[in-house]
Image (cartoon, rainbow, N blue to C red):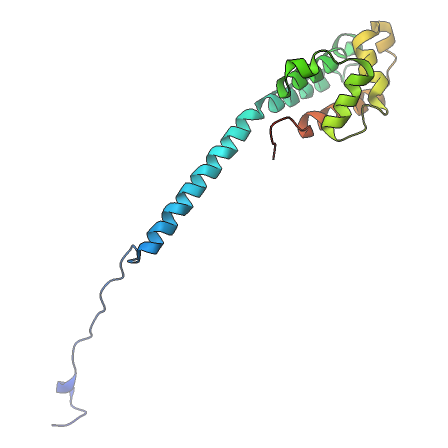
Length: 168
């Protein structure tokens, strides 16, 4: 018989298909562990998102106030809403007992401490206090730059303040 003869050829042997699931039980344990870790992480992110709902609502309200403040004739009516918004946001993020009784310099120190900033003891100090307690005529004397600086400080505080729970 000739070694180069076509009669010595055989059909192609096809290997068995590869299994979809790995046969080793360690892979199953690893897969279940990854699924549980992903599930736990997802639940934690959802709960954090829920805890920060008050922030999102406060930022939306601040944005709405900012749009209305573009009309200079509305300063007298709208400026008191900014300190009210900050106080409501602080009460939502902390306990009422810790926040409601604060006023004046104690209130501004609280905002600076929890917001890791010095905005409220600096330029925005007088504006925030005056928006709450001064007459409408006095509030009308604030410049656009002062109002913008106050809005910027309030926006930063709402977005970045640290609450008693661990925010990440």
